[in-house]
Image 1 (tube, helix red, strand yellow):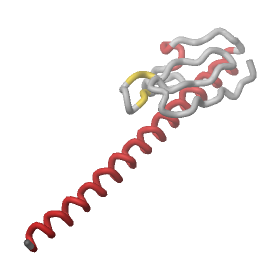
Image 2 (cartoon, one colour):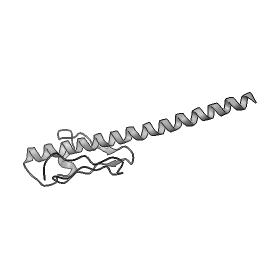
Image 3 (cartoon, one colour):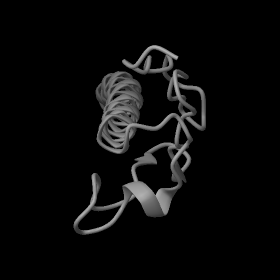
Length: 107
């Protein structure tokens, strides 16, 4: 009888711990994706300002060891790359788990 109570208490504690872990993991992935969106928006803004253009750059224009980003920013949830925004557009998560990051250059 006492053993069943102990097992039940451990089960309840495990359920609470697992749900808290999953929620924290989801929140950290969303924060990581939003940070990667901001990196892409900042790199694109730097490109537009430096090149004095409004044409949308490609990954090869932004990503490289001597360019604006050293590696492609990904959404940690779906492992998909963050898309390069058009001039004046916002950067969106491929999984739509976070709100779009607004581009700081007026279009």
